[in-house]
Length: 316
Image 1 (tube, rainbow, N blue to C red):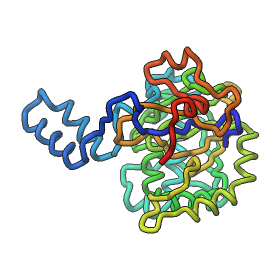
Image 2 (cartoon, rainbow, N blue to C red):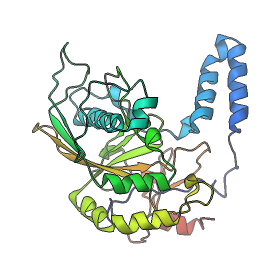
Image 3 (cartoon, rainbow, N blue to C red):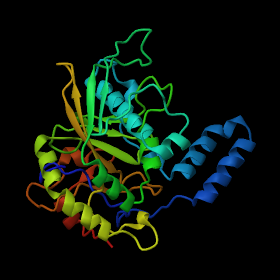
C-alpha cells in the first residue's frame, strides 16, 4: 500500500485536447479482420494473431509495458522472485475447487497452502533435476488477509478462477511469464518493482513495511467502501475510483542474495482496448508533483498532479 509519496500510477485514458481522437475497432470487427487475414494466407498471419489476441483479451498490445521475465539473467533477483510469485499463485489456485476442475493445465507437483494460508517451497538448483531454468532458493509464501481480499475481488468482478488462472504458473513453464519493471524503469521516486501478469490485467507491486502497515489499518474500511460501490447489474461496473487492491502476499527467501518481499496485487488500469494518449500519476497532492523535463521528453511520459491541473483535465 503506497504512502503519500509512493502511490501506484493512476491514469486517464481520455485523449489529449490537442490530439486526434482515435478508438480501436469493436471486438467482433477485430475477430472478423483477424480471421480474414488468416484466410488470405501466411502474409497476414502476424496481423491476424495480434488482432484476435486483442479481441479475446480486451488488451491493446500498444499498452503493454515491462520486460519479459525470461529475458532477465537467471540469477537476477527479480527473475527469481517473479518465478517464485507465479509458483505461489499457482499453488493457491490449486486449493480452489473450481480452479482444480476448470484449469487442467496448471501443474500438479507444487505444494498446497496450509490452513493458515502458508505455502513452503524447497530449494531447487538449476540442474537437470529441476523443472525450471531459474534457480529457486527455499522460500515461504504467506497470503495476508485472504478472506477479505476474496470479498474485494468479488466486488470488482474478478472471479477466483480468473485471478489464479491468469497469475498462476502454467504447467511445464520453465521461467516466469510475467513482465518486469525494475525501479530504474519507473517514473516515481520509490525503489519499488512491479510484475505484470501475461495479459497485463494485473500488477504485483513491491511494498515497504510501512505500506503493509497502512494497508492493514485501512483494509476493513476499504473493503466496506468497495462493497458499497458494487455495480447494480455487474460487479465489474464497480463505481469506486480508488486503486483496486485485490491481494497481498509475503515472501520469505532462505537466501541472503534474495531479499524478502511483500507484493500487493492490483488491477491494471492501462490494460484496456482503447489507445492511451496520455498517462497521469495522480496522488492528490501538488507538492513537487510536476513531470520533469526529462520525463516529458520520453516517448510515453507520465504526467503528475500539477500537469493535470495546468492541462485542464477532468474525470467525467
